Length: 407
Image (tube, rainbow, N blue to C red; front, side):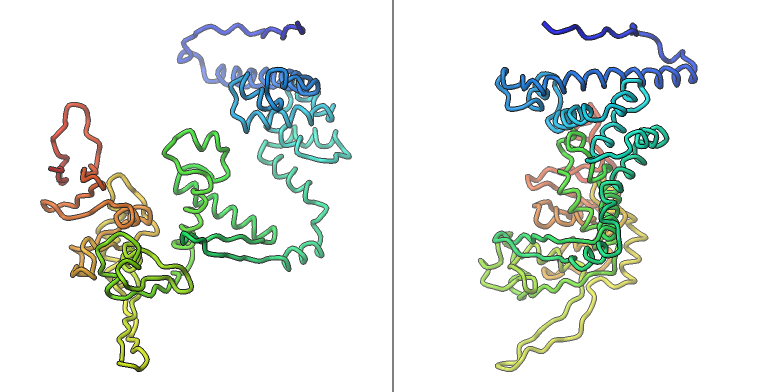
């Protein structure tokens, strides 16, 4: 058998930490962090040797990261990261010594391990000692791109900018593009900020953290939500042209509008369901076209479904999305409880503010919204009422004030 791991010098016993003074807590936290760094370096050195021997296949695994994930109960991505750092540390003796001495944290070492060719390793170690982990990450990122940081390269990058898109058969829009470094950084920052505001977690967060709550959307979905939020709230109101026949807009069927024998489609884009058309038409500019026999259509003047004055009044009344539990205040849509194409009036009693997510939910998502006993009642597709607050134990059947109970 190989040599035994060194035993930890600290003996941990259960203590009442509430009695420790704050300065003692601070010393112990910082001291143990140094011990963790020392033992982390030793652990990575063992991984590097295990990897060098290519011992993982002996256990039936394709590589060290796969074996490490299994043997040490580590997520696959974290395991791959550990193996990458362990391999690189074997080539960085000064970084490894500072790590083994407890001077550098794993986060800093991981950043330094991303460098390719290092001419001044001692200088990088000093930079790491004097920087926070975030500052070091930025410095390493700049170091990796320093060779292209000149005017000609910047001009070439700008000249290569582009954005393209195409429609998939299912009607989804796909796009790809290229931005100059400064524009790309601005876009990433805007998306990360919006994603954190929407979901409480940056879009660039590690997937093992992001997936801790199964109800949280995937990272890519969070980025789409953030980009949409930016387009809606962070820029002038966009104009999306929707061509709709009256028959299609009034159709009660949730299926594709082609089944209704009428046209309902975005300009230069695929057809959309009638329910999607109604959602888009809830709060929009309308231009009515009337046929003139065999002549061209007569396009009337554009008019707002919800006027600016009405919009301001709704914002004062509702303040935020009215769906139970939602506190979103920006990018809200004015939703008709009874849609105007079905005879609903555009007035306070028939309008309610909903965020983009919940507006889609009460149209395409099968949820319903209605006035019951003087209050708004949201129902799931199966008919169950979405309560404003969850019922505490022992109160089943008792309605919260102002909320109807499903029969």
